[in-house]
Image (cartoon, rainbow, N blue to C red; front, side, top):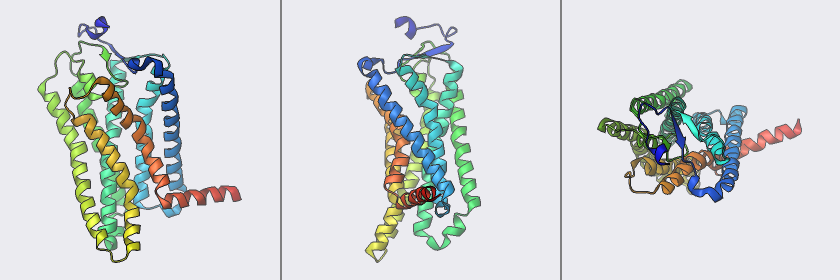
Length: 313
């Protein structure tokens, strides 16, 4: 282990994941659980995207953004979970610097895109509830396409800047005390981490997490104040129902991201860090289809229509 932890920076051509080696007796159980959650995530997101595409009742900006989010969550899972599952059954624990950089780039790209997409979905709900008469004008399909492409471009631009800044460093250790290439575990392997890297990580975290979270908070304050002004209880209930699924996903998503990227370095043990990482890499992607299928009446009705159509044919 000591030879793995220390290597000459010129010799480091690959890293080795520690993975879940602290849970040796639970590795098969973890494999089964994570595989089941992964399959549910893929199936759930594919079903969400398919239903939105097939059912014309869901051809609205809100569900367009949901289908983009589900697609992004699917690719986000593909970047992390298959390699994690292979390591749990004793397959290759090593990864080249190039592959590690690629994994980090796509992981951050999709993660930041998801954060920004949730903010865009919050804006959509704000316009729908606070300015309903202007909704079709403000949220036309051209605006939706522009917002989506801008969010994706921004997410991967931030990711590219962060990844290049990290992999320009020299590395003196090879053991990644994690199960995938994340920012902090990879930075910990550098011979020296310039202060500029820490500043850059903080700036990107503020722009990708804090800024959209603040925007969402303000949006929901305005949304809730507007809903409370609705005279009928039925109208208030219906308005709240359109936001409930999105708000649930937002709270869990931003909560996990904030804990992972804003906590002090030494606050948690490595096992606690891994538990947090499992939450936002395995649990959070599953949350989207589960919440939108269990809590959203329009998606449930669309699913019944699609299933009913298939059975009749």
